[in-house]
Image 1 (cartoon, one colour):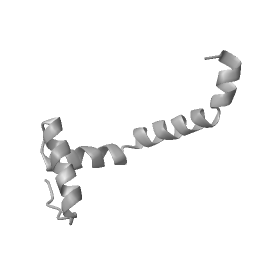
Image 2: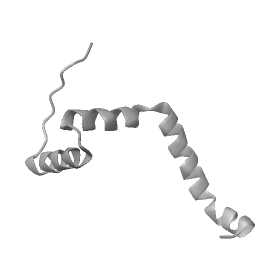
Image 3: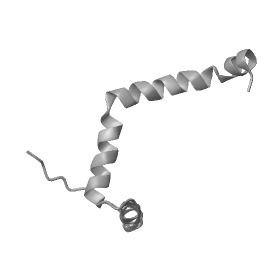
Image 4: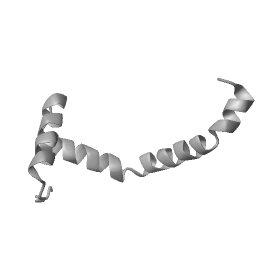
Length: 67
């Protein structure tokens, strides 16, 4: 079952959202759903934490393994 959700967006943001959806060949609803699902994905969150940790240690990797 799906639910209907209403949100308020200012006009400029809505225009940008509509343009992005059109450029991707999708709908505003599908774009919002995709981005929200991605944001709530636990595996994605863990991946981003790993990326942050790697970035924190980038100098070590550079000195140890070069460019």
